[in-house]
Amino acid sequence: MEIQNGQEIATFAGGCFWCTEAVFLELNGVSKVVSGYIGGNTVNPTYQEIGTGDTGHAEAIEITFDPNKISFGELLEIFFATHDPTTLNRQGNDIGTQYRSEIFYHNAAQKQLSEDYIALMTTENTFGKPIVTKISSATKFYVAEDYHQNYYNQNKTQGYCSYVITPKIDKLKKIYQDKLKK
Image 1 (tube, rainbow, N blue to C red):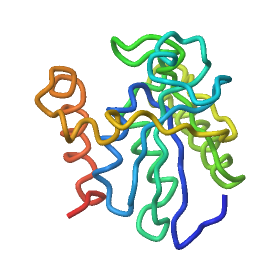
Image 2: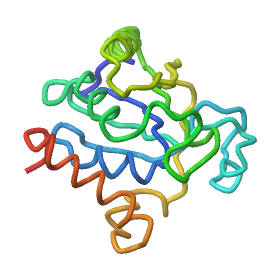
Image 3: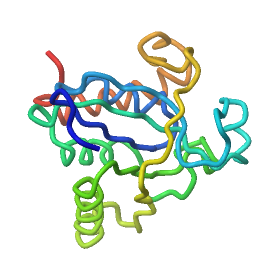
Image 4: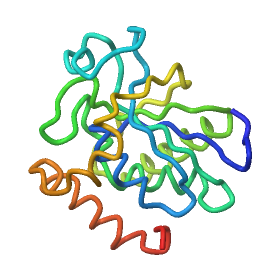
């Protein structure tokens, strides 16, 4: 994918899209984050269909960002710092192929950076366990239902949000303060 109007697209699956969307919406240089489904076989899948694990899709986010303000490499760093890339088809209590860790690259540079970053973390044994994150070419991205968009910011007091997502946001704010929107 070419940079258009100074913007580039990154697509990540790191478990529940409510969590990943909330994290990336906080970043300076990110203009839009959309929750949706990618990597499966069903055309126009629904949340209910994804939940069965039968469609092959992952819950994912499509990030529109300005590479002059935040690089794809910085997005990768934050992606790996805010989910567990060592658990196959699982993030915490969310279990199933729809919760897998996967990077969907849009060009050769994103593919190479992703491969190099995982190789570096593997060499350094960053997580103490093998990284299971897949790297795949981006396929058709299906936008999730409206109620999934900006979910955390609209439902912060909901149990899942306060117990699972808020700690991720707190970690992001502590470690990546210089990358946040003002």
